[in-house]
Amino acid sequence: MGNSIVVLPTYNEADNIVEIINSIISLPVFFDVLVVDDNSPDGTSKLVHNLSIKHEKRIFIIDRIKKEGLGKAYKDGFIWALENKYDLVFEMDADFSHNPNDLVRIHENLNNYDLVIGSRYIDGINVVNWPLGRIVLSYFASIYSRIITGMPVKDATSGFVGYKIEVLKSIDLESLVFNGYAFQIELKFKSYLKKFRIKEIPIIFKDRIHGDSKMNGSIIFEAIYGLIVLRIKSLFKM
Image (cartoon, rainbow, N blue to C red; front, side):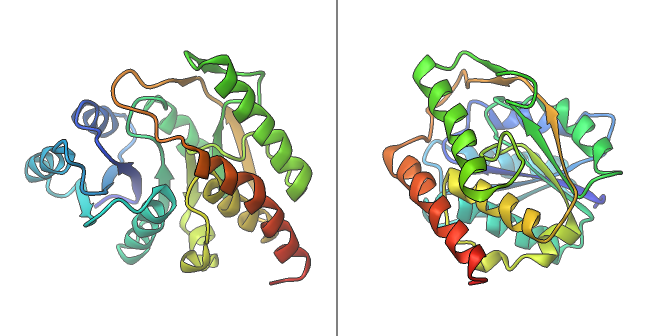
């Protein structure tokens, strides 16, 4: 095992998973990969298991028995990384919305910061092939999160993030309550409250080519009202 691991939550990513893993382990910086699969009916897990035999000390998988959501997948992955004593933990999408090459830049910035965010909005709006309505929703969700939480992060819903392990150790991961985009904001907000050094670097986000988006109405509802709950709890130290 190395000291850096990329956590990839998956559900029906058979069209992408082999290529994304091969892209990550071919980078000039050494990354292990942990896939957290929600019992994908398309055979994603089997493809990962086959790769893990070939790269037994670099590719790992957690097979969950049912679909439990993004936030729970990341929690399980982060806890696994803690138990296996990694120093740096990265999260990203498995569908090439995030460019694996940007992992190198995030990794480099962790030399000087505790949490590094691949940001779509730190340098304008860097989103490709999304419908206008979704761009507007995502962009204003980030503005909304800054207003409600007071956190100076322009892309709080970003799922492309690198953490020093000290950040994850300091947070009771089991206490995280949200499961969609609000999960991403919750983890960044708790890191911010603990005064960890946060850095955003610009990335270009591309909409997936294969597979379906996991966005739905309940995720949006959770993000809108979940932020208010987070802020209230922080004010009363709940």
